[in-house]
Image (cartoon, rainbow, N blue to C red; front, top):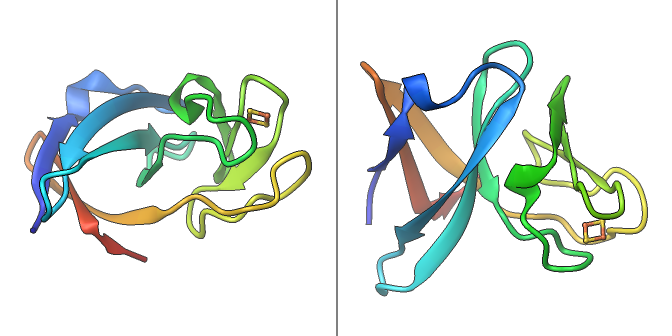
Length: 111
Ligand code: FES
């Protein structure tokens, strides 16, 4: 698979996130959190919190992290690493690119 359109750059203000479902090379649906950090940079990570299977895109975005809204575990937007309990496992980080107003994500390429 390759980069596919996830959303428009107009869909996300700084410090926000949006859940999208994208198909991988095997046709499986992959939940992705497209995140625009507070500095305006773009990230794509797995949308499912590794602690309790809640949607990370409903969490709080700030300074390179997204914090799960359910129990507060923060994840690093660049590495996917869980930075504090109660989550201990990372989320996948996907390749992302911006072309014009299109936000493109490759769910078959993890960083
Ligand atoms: S479900 Fe995300 S920290 Fe518990």
